[in-house]
Length: 174
Image 1 (cartoon, helix red, strand yellow):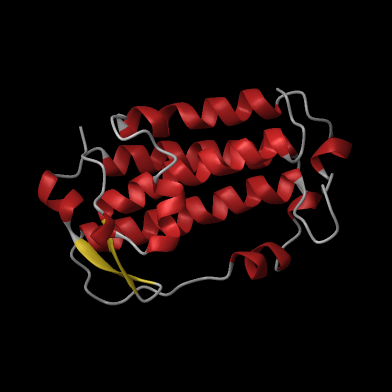
Image 2 (tube, helix red, strand yellow):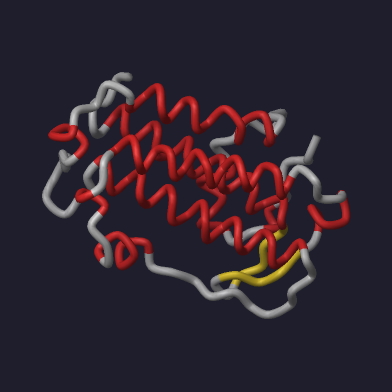
């Protein structure tokens, strides 16, 4: 079991994601089940529904999943760098700029879900092999301190956040 992160292991903004993960969770069990949860939630969403935006300026369902892919990649890279004792500060990113810079709506929803699933599986293989010392390591990302542990919990909480949004704001029922 990987202990729940302490508040000095991450920037407070990310606490909203981390706090979505129940404190007694097995983080790797949660990370393993999330691709299936996402696939099951989105399996009956048509292409028209996947391009739906709940309001002007909001992301489509495809853009939400594309964003999940981007964040999975970026936060996993951060966790890997820190776990490997890379002491260089890691850059931040602007999520809206990333979504605007590509056309996720030109892709199929199953393709985007598969991309997320494969990334997550690779990340689990990488991170479950880390030692306790590696999980505890800390570095800097976006100008703030992060532990590897906090980044893993952020990955899980970030998906919980967006799945809840897909259900509430996009009315996706799976």
